[in-house]
Image (tube, rainbow, N blue to C red):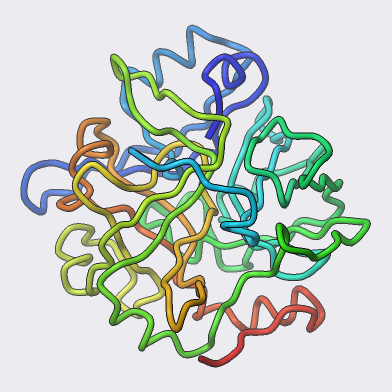
Length: 309
């Protein structure tokens, strides 16, 4: 999550196609993907006024402690469309991280990743910063597809980060069916935590919150365009959920005292009120990472592989 002044001066959140969250299940109006550029404040506020959301924030989140989410990563990068953007990610190996495809698809240099820190400005201490030198978007991801499917990408960086109490790789399993039977999940990220007069207010600190994990039938009743192959999941809670600022960040389920990543943030409600207060009715949608184990293994040259419970 980041300070609005930073957003206006230097960064924009990575855009995702957001969907109208009207009362009931009327989600047929698709708002085209829009990227916010920090170089034009007037354009920024106009687009915020139109309530285009970019899923990746933690509404009403608590501040994370150092080492609480050692798999969490923060991305800062230039876009081919102009301006600088930020996204969330999860560490796959000492040289790779997984994030959203809508983050990687227009990513270009300069691009950096930070792991170990709980503040996006943190330099030194537990934070390790690296330059991103390779960007891979899932081949079948199409940024022009309003259904917003297969939203996943991987970045490679150097030199390798050092694993320690504050920096650890994420845990992804190839069979997540038992995890998805859980009723609760944890979201985390450096994103928006509330709206004020339709303007996203962000925190530069890593925040987290507990949300409800919904079954696929409920998700599909809220978001008709969700993939029937169940490559996506949805989650949210009253007054809690993801939002603008950490697309690509993890959603995790606790099992036997350990956190396992089941998804990464993709998109959510366009209406700021629904995004902030009503994610029990209009939950955010996440890419289901277990469906991309082959992509993860191939792209990382076997450095990262899905495990078993």
